[in-house]
Length: 164
Image (cartoon, rainbow, N blue to C red; front, side):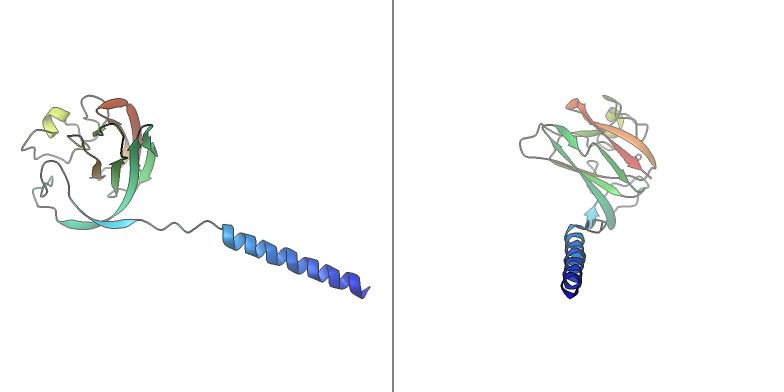
């Protein structure tokens, strides 16, 4: 009787210990917001801001979208109002020109067209439009809503930013 009790206790210890070891090594890592200091990089000028006050630096939460041969990944991101989404092209990807839907006008986010908000000297609301090709583009989403976007050079490559 003593042997079977000892075996039972040993089995219980192994099961509990193994379960604890498995859970401690396979638990998901806690989600920590990615924050960074960013300077306004609007194509209309480093000190561009819609209210006329030069933008300096600020700490913001960010989401990153990668553009590659298969389009944007992830194709949908959800951020809070005031967060930044950074779009980065992978080496070897087609040229990237992130722009608000619909193509080709790019007026979905702020109501101005590509020809208006990409013009030199534009001083209106910040457009969700890269206004030229490049490897990276960052945009601070100040308006809540669901915003479709595309690559102006390949408008079949699309995505969505949900701003809460």
